[in-house]
Amino acid sequence: MRLLWIACVVTGCGSSSSTPVDTGPIEDATPDSVSIAAPCDPSTTGLIAPLPTCSPTHPCVRLALEVPQVPITTASDPIACADPRWTGRRSWTIDGVVREACVFSPSGSEPRALVLWFHPGGLGGDVAEQETHVLDKAVAAGFHLAVVQGRNLHFPTEAPRDGRHHDFYYRDLRSPSLNPDIVSADHLIDLLVAEGAIDPRRIHVMGWSNGAFFGQLYAIARHTTPTPGGSRIASAAVFAGADPFGDIERNPFTDEPWDASPRCELTTTPRSAVPILLVHRTCDLAVPCGPTDFACFGAEPNFETSRWLASAQVRGVTGLEGHLIGGVELGAAADLDANACTVVAGSTCDPTPCRDDPTSSGCLCLVNHLRWPDGQYNAATGVDREPLMLEFLRDHPLP
Image: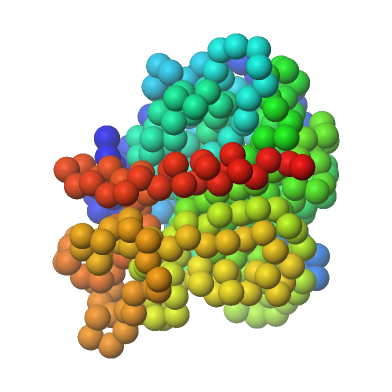
């Protein structure tokens, strides 16, 4: 079902549901229902409490375009895990919110690598089997794969993005953390490791868009500081992300614009040597490659990949490296290695939506963001970059 997400951005789509199965232990985190007038502390965690979940008393109404345009009143939704190759689904509860993940575990007793895959904002974890070939490669390579379902959150961006996300704005990187999404990932890893089939030196992270931001944050949080169960992240490979320590445009606790002080961008970036590969395209409407598409499309603060790659070393994130690939705005060069971002300025800056002009630079650069780089896009083909990302993980186990 290739490019389902792009169709949903234009027309809107429904979501599937199913009943949770095995339930893990309950853990506690800071409640999400917090009302805060000044939401930021740049010297500590950025946002000073977790992003609030959607609820009957605080419904989510600034909805991402790819989800049904009906107010969201639930904190979480089930993940389908429809592909028969999934070997299980894990369910657990944190602070009264049911969390879920689709899990593939290979047969055999030899410890194997584990990859946690974090979905982009909006449709949720089922995008992994609909829009990527990560499960195919997990089956072929014989490593464990867990696709984690995000919560329904009020999101602090100028663009309406309420819906399923992972919270990278509340940067409590301690172990145990008070960020429910960090707690959730910690719990899932510790649960799977306790089952005895995971190689503790090869626990990795992948993510796309919102999942790329959160995946980087989580890898930085758990590379040196272990989970409560003692596990650490060896490396990460993500697509279409940027600086996970940036600012907000709206107060998620009041759903109003926030342009006052204090700000949410961290004063000091946490230092880390965790190896992170950031694959990104030459033009991207949601997470721009460079300054011209950033300016043209009015992206969120710090959502510029080149700026993050250029500043990370100085800020102490020494293991980050970028891999630039072409997009559809370059025609036949899609997915090939590229040397520079596309200049989208002057007459080429056209943010017209896809529904009005599918050939505009805004539409083409949005398509770039919505195409996970596995090289297969309906009738068109490109270069599969999943092997590059997975090889990076294989080459970077814990010492």
